[in-house]
Image: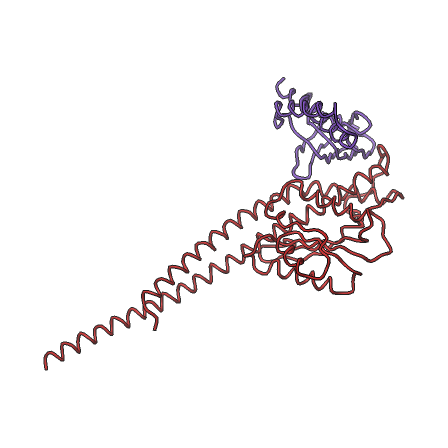
Length: 135
Length: 286
């Protein structure tokens, strides 16, 4: 099936992206997930990572954490807990958060482990996505 | 008869009040616009979530603790009012309806969760158990407040402290109208499938339907609480706008009346003075 995908990324406070794309890569809970037009309908939870979408050979990125995505043959809807565009990311802040999380992980107790790991993953993703803005 | 100077003083005081009510009306209008924007921004998320959840609930036989209908009839009623006054009968009418609901035999031994200072103050003095209160949340709403309250309610439901949880709030209909709305939050009623959306889609589920349901349901509950709070805030600002508009109008009327009275009094004083002068002159002539 030719054509393109409609991509919508929303969080519960705003719509981050509403565009068309030729290819999308999602950070699924079970690993990266590539979506081309005509994909089988799929519902998946999301982990933490980069969401990439390509429109006319130009690649754009978002930092994503949590939530889920609905994939239809002509449409992808992402409901994320966190979704940020490269321009919105404060690199210095993300670096600081990563250091905090790493330091905390070294000494943390089990109860906080998951939370800190999630924080670390988000910080790392933010840094990745944020750096892409510059390049 | 009132002294002309006293009347003048009263006119000035009413004018001062009118300026305040006018300013409050404009502030409420600005806040209402912001509240409506916030609702509009949150809508795509809520809509997509309901759609996906409807289709998921329809085609899986998996059940989830948050969907479970229980035998018991204990209930929590979440009453959402404003923190502040000066918005007409906004909170008062809602609290009256809440009291009627609680007093009726609809539920067995109901308890109250009060959101908004007005509700909190009201239920501290009532016989129903006040299980939780949020006296400052409405006027200082943070992004995490809705989800936090939702998690608290879900925990209570999970632990079996109640068999159902209901939301009662004012919903924004139009500038002049707020509708009192009662919805069941828990157990979750899966949203009805959207007929217009066309034939149902057969999804692949990743990791699996059960995990997804576990992920989606709490989010749905959070969204519902959030939506109710947003809606109530918009309705509050609309109610305040209307109330302040009325107050401004009343002040104008009062000023008109007082001005008329002032002019009459002044006229009477002048007439009296003239009579005195004339009669004084006449007395001299004689």
